[in-house]
View 1 (cartoon, helix red, strand yellow):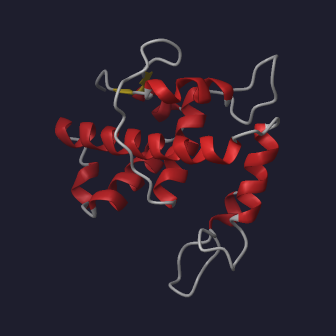
View 2: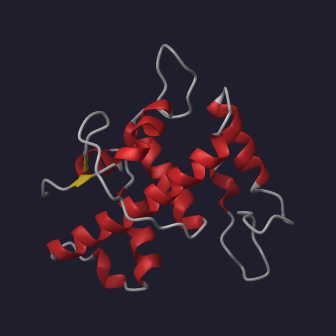
Length: 161
């Protein structure tokens, strides 16, 4: 596998760090990869894709793609890329340019998701509670961002909660 890495925008680095559980807080995620995957899924769900701009060189630095693969996140990354490009060939394992395209798409959706999280978490003391409230609200069938099955037959993600 290549040395590709998932980068974090410099202006989102502090948010990503604050999303990771430590002795000082009760944050919802165990690793940077977990937080970035959640942010990318949120960004993809809400169609928020934002270029990175300046990259964080300190903590969190670029995260090896191997960490995402070892945690079983590779299929989600591929699905996000397929949805973004509407091209199944983007998951081809034989083309390095497609792998880089998948990484760029993932980074941009994660950056967009982090922007959304920053707005949602503004002023929150307990990020875990606020994110749970956010997810609960998304189950509302009258909410346009709901993840429940709608009349278009969208897949119901509630069984994964």
